[in-house]
Image 1 (cartoon, one colour):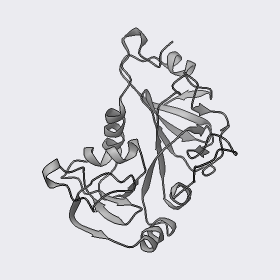
Image 2: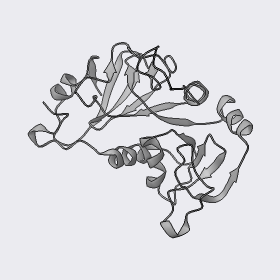
Image 3: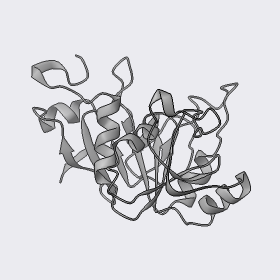
Length: 220
């Protein structure tokens, strides 16, 4: 069984997932967009909506990816992707950037994930305690420093295994930090009773979504 593509259901692609997250970011928030799919959300925040995007390598007021003729090779985000700067944006050093993170000044951090547990635990940096060549990086600081954490990821692995679990099996990035999850199939709130489904892609039914999820789902 494929991940939601049977019965005419069309899962969101990476761009669609990023756009769905961007749609929910309110006016006036200071937001960090993590490496991977989250960084694409900057391309979908309407220019008339004032959202101040932070990148941990030292940008406050980051804009969308610029057209090829306007790229600055020295202006990149934490994923080393070429970005732009919104009017009023600023560059800061690494220490000041992480002071913003650790000081609780970010309204939201959007992170990628490998697994999220029904209690809000997040695993997004390694597949096992013995994995070599990986580092937890700034995700740990962001997960505990931001006022809110949303995670965007595929609903299942490439071989169909669930990513929304009762308990994470990978090493944790942070415990009980996730408030909302965006997948290619649904949007889910993390609540005291577990995952509450608040939105699904057109044509997808609740039973099919539950079949792709290890943790128990609740209707919103």
